[in-house]
Amino acid sequence: MKSLLLALLLLSSAGQAFSQGWEEDKPEKLRLDKGLKYNVEMQADFSSGSTPLWLNANRYGLSSLDETNGYVRAGLFRPLRTDSARRWGVGYGVDLAVPYNYTSNFVVQQAFVEARWLHGVLTVGSKQYPMELKDDRLSSGSQTFGINARPVPQVRLALPDYWTLPFANGWLHLKGHIAYGMMTDDGWQHDFTGKKSKYADNVLYHSKAGYLKFGNENFFCPFSFELGLEMASTFGGTSYQPDGNGGMTAIKGDTGFSAFWNAFIPGGADVGETTYQNAEGNQVGSWLVRLNWEEDLWRFSIYADKYFEDHSAMFLVDYDGYGEGSEWQEKKKSRYLLYDFKDIMLGAEFRMNYDRWVNGVVFEYIYSKYQSGPIYHDHTSTIPDHIGGKDNFYNHGIYTGWQHWGQVMGNPLYRSPLYNSDGTICVKDNRFMAFHLGIDGCPIERFTYRLLASWQEGLGTYDDPYGKSRHNFSFMLEGQYAFGGKLLKGWSVKGAYGMDLGSILGNNYGFQLTVAKTGILNL
Image (tube, rainbow, N blue to C red; front, side, top):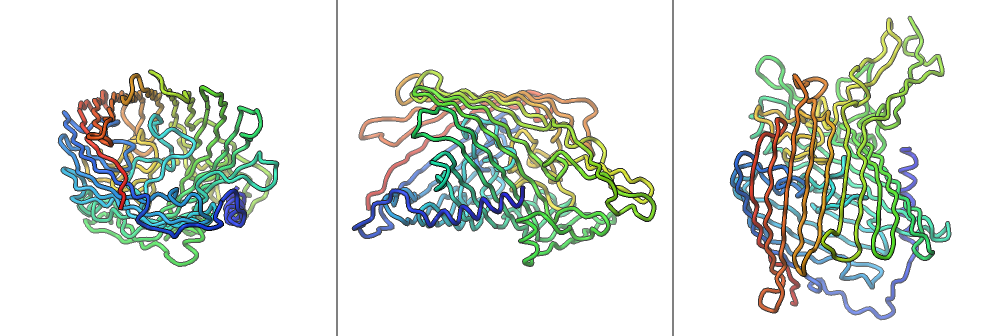
């Protein structure tokens, strides 16, 4: 499958050579001050206990758990679609926040420049990217590329929208990306851990994804099918771990060409690994599948997100045919160990194409208790059987796991390290089962609402299980009114109430108020 992903990305690059519908006989002079959009936003949270889950999660990390917090935010953007009639285009954006009671005193939420040639886009910097094959407003979040943590500065080459392949008569479409970057939370890690528990500096980041869509809008065929593979890695940098004597041991990762290649196609080994070697760095990913049925007034979809951290969860199979005695490292038999197909996220989405009291409904089921089973055992000279369980989702032995600035970079129902009170950067509840419901609508003109509700049963982790299962219920009701008229055009006010009940996140209650102004600058 790795070779297939590489082939998809190569096809993405080759696809840029085809032009589809640009009209540029006599284009006007490019103006970088044309099409500028701005937004100014003020937000305040008031809570009893921590900020409730759905008042702080899935906001690209611009949130806080403190009882009282808020920010003033301003952004200026030139979207790429400003040059949609050209064969090439330029976009940029800067998005800054001055927060109160956050993990930092000043936040560069987004700062990027990007260029498009035909369908391909090159982006440099920090930018918020929406989830693929899920509803950003109503879903609990993707398991790999979520919207819960701050953006990672990166260089990203992408085919962001589905491009119709020149064969297959318009029925096959492709999009994807590849990116390299660096994490920015070193200072936060130092403060959070006090440099007494595991932390990592100057960690590098890699992500890639490929998506195929089968369907044709030019024919009377309401059905379409989407298949995706998302993979990412954190690697390089220097990890610091307690040495047992009050000091810290430094583990310096490789940053040479081979490290970048092993991040792209998982391979190699981490520092210190000899006989038993895993792929270099912290490797994570998801298989995605989505089936769509679309009519004139509505559309309905079902989807799945299968998360993995190694081959046992990615392919549900491990080789288990090693020899015995002096041949214990040799592959002697055609024998494989098959893992159960349990850990998965399943969802259903209904969406009206016109405003109604109920515009959209999302229901999701998430299960992560299995993680390839409770036993981890590499074969030995006396025991030839090989089992690769205890995958420990979102955690890693060397790096600080799939997190950035204390928030998990995937689905926030995995309890983020920011909740930990002992100064450790790890996900302490990654074995759970949950149900999630999201509803939104527009009952009257210019007023919209959103409801999110999640119930969760958690077991902790395999290495540190709870004494008994813990439960949690999180709820949020949000309403937003967009003002009209010349005087208040572009202004909106949004209020939300949220709460958590249970022993995973604790009992929390809170209210959030947001006032925003958006518009277009005509320079």
